[in-house]
Length: 462
Image (tube, rainbow, N blue to C red; front, top):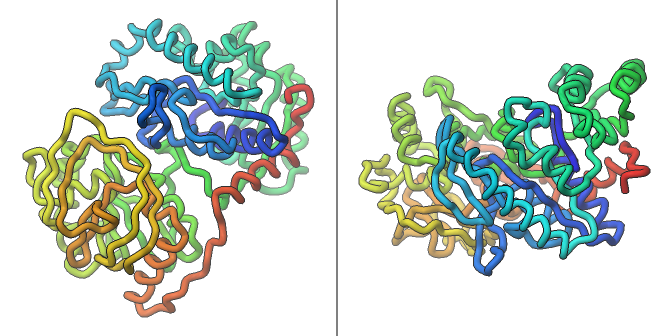
């Protein structure tokens, strides 16, 4: 099991690496996270057939294992709808929106779902790589814990504790986490991992021996900082902006969801992807993106309250605009009775049943993309949005410089991404052929596994 000193320290990253490392050794391995809180979701095979939702990190880990994503790999997914409530997804299906208090009151019910899913998963795998959430040292949450030490004890799992040195304070974070654990929990921790180190290791070395002496737990390794390996992020803490020759501006909605739709684009050389909430900072980008949204109606109201709607309308006259899922709905004339931005000839109604499925199609030739480019993505949405002018297959819409689609993963394909970047560069009067990122997901998995093989001592654990 991999636990961390906080959210965003690299637990998912390390679990993905371990999944690929074990798969390469010929082991039947599966990922597992009892409870995930994330608006980045992916479709997964259901326990009774059909499709359900799991956290995107576990879907990626399943791919690293060489197996299909399945709802048992993440039996509980919490999709926040506010500061105090979440849409509770159990075994891939929503059981409703619950407050934090009401959710915790039903722990026994959720624990049964977790342990049943874990048992089924164990029937299919020799080794399970379990991911924790946040920190096991949140002593106010310990009584209701299902995802950290409670899961470690249930699975009789050894624990690697990960800290992020790039964020600073890693020695205090590791030692402080151990100090707040009780004796039985602390005994589970078999090694410390320092993640995201950059610079000369000789500078770090003098601190390791005193840490081990005080903690009584060995440092198993120091993993180098790598921001060039394309593994999808899980946490909104992972949203980062960067500058580039091609300027892509994404409106950071309060309930932004599936922001991994922009991850592959952000890794392309010469492409900058920035997230903005201030209308005065949007400027004149080469592409404006309205991303996915967990609560589209409230995010549209937020957009208007900040007068970002005026920015979108003004830019749409001369700048390509792309709406993804919830962002696509906002660009239409109406969504569930609320007036939309009116840039696309569509209207959205919400259904009771969520639409979840993988989806493959080809571009129609509308907007700034040529026809025939393959898209291999997925859909997760309650909205139903008929369109006579689709962007991809029979999905989405395009009119002038404005387009939208329900297909998450639109920009994951290298061919489509290259075509989009080329079109944006041409509009700027630049060479239409951008440099290639020359990366794919399988190569990224192997890069992670290589790093772990090289920098992490797993003797006695594997």
